[in-house]
Image 1 (cartoon, rainbow, N blue to C red):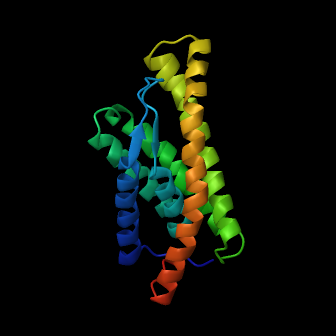
Image 2 (tube, rainbow, N blue to C red; image 1 turned 30 degrees about the vertical axis):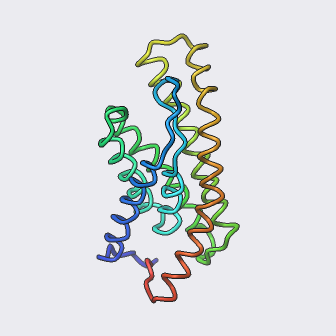
Length: 188
């Protein structure tokens, strides 16, 4: 088994994807509801999936987690949970990257959709669990029923963000991978 080397190109692409994740997270519409914290529609999940698809599990997980955590650090509403965001969004990129690296090296549209969907489901499960246990029960001291209602309230935005990522991340991944290959810029 060949050991992968960390090259300058991989570091630069990881930093670029982290920066794009910050920007995608900033492109948001925050709902005027206080449902166990804030609820938003945003484009950050597209970049998390794209990080995993393009960079693989470890660097993709790092880029998606770090970019999302940096966004949280820059926003007073989210700064206290940046460490949780690093872990949950990092899992998004990690899972997407694991799916992409499984089996054939060829990146196809179907595989990119599956990777994005797996990352989205992983993140949604972690995010909703955080909303229930950490934000609902621990921080706000809600009853179990009230905490469950907060999770239900977050479902529409969570599903929307996942659906947008599943639609757009594979399209972008195929286009970017093709452009990189045409210009002899590989991340392998």
